[in-house]
Length: 209
Image (cartoon, rainbow, N blue to C red; front, side, top):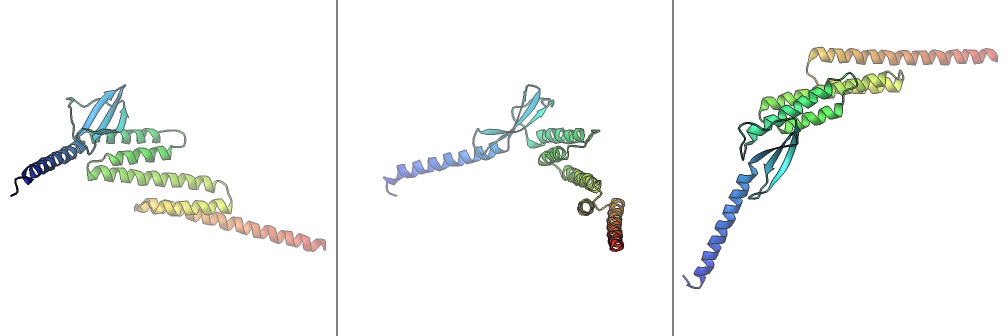
């Protein structure tokens, strides 16, 4: 080999080794998690794809630092804390005498889903999301039907049909179908009354002539 190229090859080898070390360190750091308790809240940080960078991924008010405290955690150690926090927050938003904050509940459940670590957790959240979606659609349908107009009842039917697609439970489907049938009957009654009123108006007009 050319002696002149040896230093260049050596430098190239060192640079390749440095790049390899940086990539390995970055990959290792991206799988690390950090927990910091600050002002009564637990901050969870995740390492970025860089040797030392990290970013905050969530803040959990009222959640204590896990014991024993560690410099570095794994996702399996911290994610369940975030999962439980957001599931509990969804429960709290649903336990109200007023109209539930459906958007807030869905946001909390989706946050919980992002911190699920098992298929069972994922199924639990997805079932809850379907339930909330059905409840929201049912509430909107009731509000539309309360207008007592053909337009409102038609909107209620559409919402209930959408709700029926979110469940496989036969009993729930039967209840939804009963409401749909009731709204169809109400529309038919409104149309019949309207037709009778028009007929009466026509008869009255004919009598005056």
